[in-house]
Length: 95
Image 1 (spheres, one colour):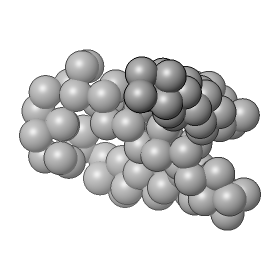
Image 2: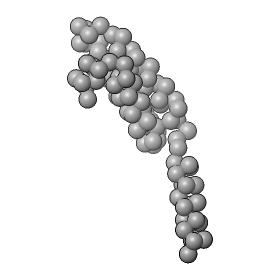
Image 3: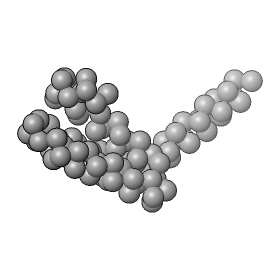
Image 4: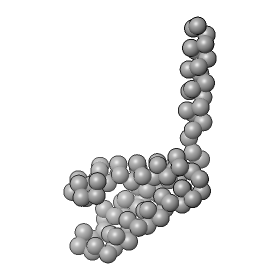
């Protein structure tokens, strides 16, 4: 019984380690750059801010279109976390 449990745990950990995406790091970097651009933009220039948000959604969609749902999710998480960490008021409005 114990050997089966260890074998099952080993197989599960193997699958989890293989579930990373080859584009995840790139997606995180792009998300942080776009989030930084949004934070640095003039809060009174709503058109510019909407353009940056559209740019972010477009970048995230690229990963989805490549079939890399993990990278798309990593992009979303990194984008949100960056804004939450660096601009509370913008985070409250967006999320």
